[in-house]
Structures are given as C-alpha cells and as structure tokens.
Image (cartoon, rainbow, N blue to C red; front, side, top):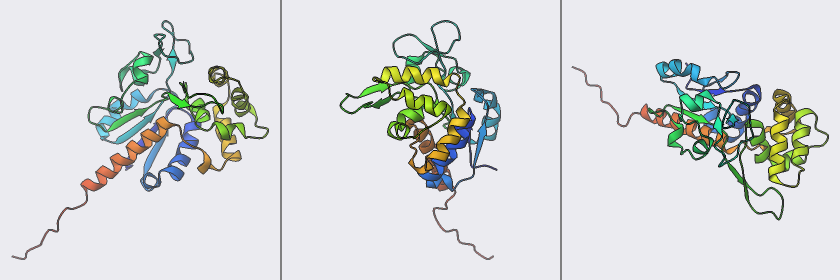
Length: 244
C-alpha cells in the first residue's frame, strides 16, 4: 500500500534518511514511503518483487570500490581501472562495473528502463577543503564519508565526540583532502556506523545536517515521480452525469 519504497544498505541510512525527508523534502514527507534496510548491497535480490509490484523505488547503495583484481575494498580513485563489487550496480542498474564509468553516469543511466526504479550511490564531490585552498574533487566510498564531506564545518565543530565520529573529526583535521579521505576510509572499515548516526542525532539538530548530493538527487527524483503520478489522477475536466 506504499506510495514508494526506499531501500538502504545499513542502519545509519535508515536512521538519517527519514530526517532528510522530514526537513528537506516536505512534499515527500506527506507521502507514504516504505523504507527498508536490506543489510548490505543486496537490493538486486528484490528486483523481481519491485518490478512485479510496479512500485516507484529508490535504491540507496554504496560504491563498494575494489581493485583491478580480487575483492578487497579499496579507496576509490579515478584512472586506476578500479571496479565496483556492488552486484546491484554491476548486474542491475546501471549495469557498469568499471569505477570510472560509474562515476560518470548520467541521471538517465541510474534509472531502470521503465523509469520506475533509480539507484543513488556516492559520486564525486567538488569542494574547498580548507580556507584558501583551490577546489578539489573527493570521491567518497560510502554514506558516512559522503555525509562528513558534505558537512565539514559541522563535523569539525563537535566537542568531545566519541567512537567513529571522533575518528572522522580527526581525519578532517588533516592538512590535505587526500589525507583526510584516506584516513576516513580506514576508519570506516572497522567503526560502528550505527553508533555514529545516533551520536550525530544527539549532538545535532537534524535540520542542520545536509544530505550528501547523491541522496538529495535521489530524493528529488522520488518526489518528482510521485508528483507525476498524482497529476495522472487529477481529472482534467468535469464529467456531466445525464439522467435517461
């Protein structure tokens, strides 16, 4: 009975995406959205169900970059022939395995053929890391470092954070964006992401958190698709009822 579904990989996204919707997408907040945590990059397993239901769906997933050979996780970089280990991205949408190809996908590439399902995954962020520096490109690996890079000032301002949030704040104190990205990648391999999300909600007014651009783009798409569907049900003229 849902208007649409949002599939997310982990508990951090499950806790924070509803806040993004509530504070940044008020029209979407008025719809009945079913948000499902699928515990990893397994959204492709629900492909037959979603296609059968014809349900408008947004799949929020990770980049899951791996090297040229093997399956070991690796920090994403351009021009190295790295791949994705994410089956949803490889075998469903957008059906691309080479990392450089994924990073350059258009919005149309990220939709199913019938435009009813869209994927959203971390994409390059252009930012000025420190005051006085030139703009650089950062390629996040997952939701958490995307969130940090989209809210650098907020993360730097936390007093006495703990756990993974503390490690990310320390990473953002590095002199260069490359060093910060590398340290965040290493921290995220072992840190507790759910605890980080809970601490963020404790320390921050949710309305102050900016969603990563790839999630904003996905939620905008979902809002537009639901608006289109509502328009389809609005009658364009009055129908007269005549008595025989």
